[in-house]
Amino acid sequence: MTKLKLKTMKNISKKIIHLLIFTFLLSATASARTYEKEGTIERKFDIKKNTRIEFTNKNSDLQIHTWNKQAVKLECYYKIRSNNEEDIETVLEALEQLGVMQSSSTLSIKTSIFSNVHSVVFSGVINKIVATLSDGPVVNLKGFKVEYVLTLPDNHDFLLKQKYSDVNMSNYAGNLELDLYDVDFRGGKLPNTTSLKAKYSSFYLGSLGDCVVDIYDTDVEVESMGDLDLKSKYSKFEAGHVGAVVIDSYDDKFYLTELKSIEGNSKYSDFEIGSIEFGDLDLYDCDITGKNCGKLKMVAKYSGIIFDNIDIFEFPSCYDNKVTANYVGEFSTISKYTEFEFGRIAGMIDFETYDDKLLVERIDEDFYFININGKYAKVELNFSGSPQYFLDVDFKYTKHDLPDDVLFSNLETKSSKFIASGRTEGLRKADEVKISKDDAGIRKANIGKITIEQYDGTLTIKH
Image (cartoon, rainbow, N blue to C red):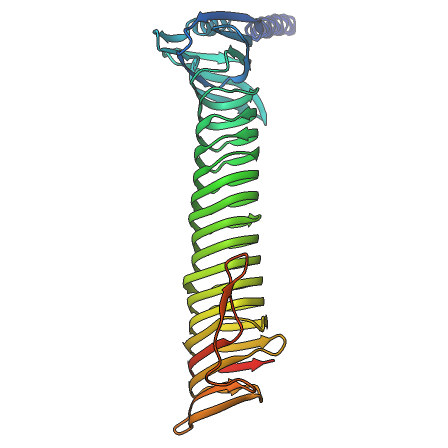
């Protein structure tokens, strides 16, 4: 073959290749064309005064407003992008077709057009969004944004079910139920919220009323609310003002600034609480810090308990805890392996102990009664002033340091025992004991009574 023919064939081949490349690029450019539509769809529903409103929404942000009309208005704001114009039309048809059921007593609206949405990522960038519509078709989108605005009268029973989106809600006076999944909810004053159920969500609320709350891996922050009935796991609950609190908690965090009372059970949770009238808690491996408490009843294991002041402190089952309080009026416990440290005891100690440590820095001189019965305990009691009391002791293998001004009789000191009855100097057996109560209900006496039965361990009494 001559050189001329070879050159001619090479030129023809180059032209064909160039033509094919141009055709491919033109086709790719055409296929990569992006279509976009945006607009608003509006629906309005007249309702009666007693109509219950139910609204279900998924994958679309929601704003909720109120007005003075006896009707519900729903506005849908959309913006959709796709390489396929038919896919956009398919989505718009789905948006137009709301799931509506209406009767004289109920208006139910369902707007969840997508049953499943996932992104296809290429080189770290979202290449497309594949969405399955609720009625079956699958569409490929470059992007979509659908936001609903729901306007309704604020005096109706209202149930909101929401998933995978954000909600902003203004003040609402009607009875409200919330059922949310993976939602960021911001609301105003919602004083008649009766039920709040949520997973993987967050709440920032102005106020709630008396409310039953069931949350999982959810954060709630509310300025004030009524009584709280709470079941929670892996969550955080923060309230400025709250009424009576009942909890069933697992691995949560609580920040309750002002509350009336708290009761229930918890595992692996942390508490920071303010002043309360009453507490009744069953704790396992928890930490609780509190301010003032009128009466606190507690069962606990492996926990840390710190309070400023407790008037009546009942601890019927205490195991391997660390307990600290600045002030306790009356204290009673059945305990093992726990460290107790109190700044001041005003009236009474009833301590059944096994291998505990008890340190009281100051006991009021007009205390009422102290009873200690235990094994292997380390006890140190420091009295203020010049207390007057009767003292009965029964020690075995116990190291003891007792005040010099206590006079003993009926002594038995054989076989590592020390058994005796005594009283402070100046006190006669016939002296009358007078008992009274202070304003907090703490018993006080002109003459106190101390009874100690101890096996091994140490006991120190100083004044």
